Every structure is written in structure tokens, then in C-alpha cells.
Image (cartoon, rainbow, N blue to C red; front, side, top):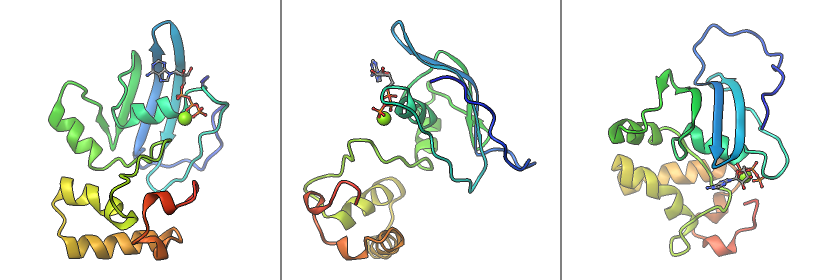
Length: 158
Ligand SMILES: Nc1ncnc2c1ncn2[C@@H]1O[C@H](COP(=O)(O)OP(=O)(O)OP(=O)(O)O)[C@@H](O)[C@H]1O
Ligand SMILES: [Mg+2]
């Protein structure tokens, strides 16, 4: 993935929620991220587009610390990633969500229970509050009726 041309966006004075400068990441001799610069403002919706194998997933995995990178800088909410600080990485991952390319829903849990799992385990969210929040979130993406469905009853897009 090559650095992209700078998009024309209205200038913002707020600090970016994600700020990436000169990010380089290689797997062995395969340099996948070749100096990426990216700024994402809070509330901004962006799409990262590129051919298969161009490094989109690798870039996202860098943002929540699943991959270490060789050079460049990356901050989330103005905090640099501290790979050797387990507490800092846990705090980061409590606030950075990611849907993996292979979906990775737990097949033995219903859709609703899958959505409720992370808040319950990580933030000790109570079941009734979790159920209400999960129903609200599913409704927001048009999946209200899938709360009790099983993952293998969903389409790929769902
Ligand atoms: N763990 C890994 N070890 C070695 N090489 C890897 C690893 N993960 C990814 N790669 C390589 O890095 C490159 C970028 O992969 P990545 O998964 O980021 O691409 P992508 O843009 O998400 O592709 P797709 O559109 O197929 O999802 C590919 O050449 C891939 O083979
Ligand atoms: Mg990918």
C-alpha cells in the first residue's frame, strides 16, 4: 500500500482520533505498508480501498495493536501505541472495535449473545443493560429481528 494523495477535506483544528505518519510495515522482505500518512477525525467515516493483498487489513490491525510496525508513528486518541505495555494495549482495545474479515462470530452463541459478549467480559456490563444495548445496536444496522438467530443463519453481509 502506497501513501495516498492527500484527500481534500475541510480543515479541522480538533486533534485527530487516529493519526498515522510514515507508517512502514513488512512481513519478512515483503514491505506491505510503505509510508502511510492518515488522519481520521472523530465522527468521520472513511473507506480504505485497494486490491487484494494491498495491506488494508494490515493497516487496520496496526491501529488496534494486533500488528507491530517497523517505523513511523501511530496515535489513537492522541496516545501512542505502547506494544510492550499490556495495560495500555488493553485500554486501547476496549475502545477500538474491529470486525474481522473472517467474521469470527462464536458459532455456539446467538447473534445477540455475540454482540453482548465483549461488553460483558471486558466492561462487566450487566445482562439486562447488555440485552437492551445489543438490541439497539442490531436495530441500528437493520438486524433487529436477528437477535435470537444463530451465526450460521446469517448471510455474509448480515
Ligand atoms: N501474518 C502475515 N505473515 C506474512 N504475510 C502476511 C501476513 N498477513 C498479511 N500478509 C501479507 O501482507 C500483504 C497484505 O495483506 P492484507 O491482509 O493486509 O491485505 P488486504 O488489503 O487486506 O487484502 P484483501 O483485500 O484480500 O483483504 C499480503 O501480501 C499478505 O500476504
Ligand atoms: Mg483484508
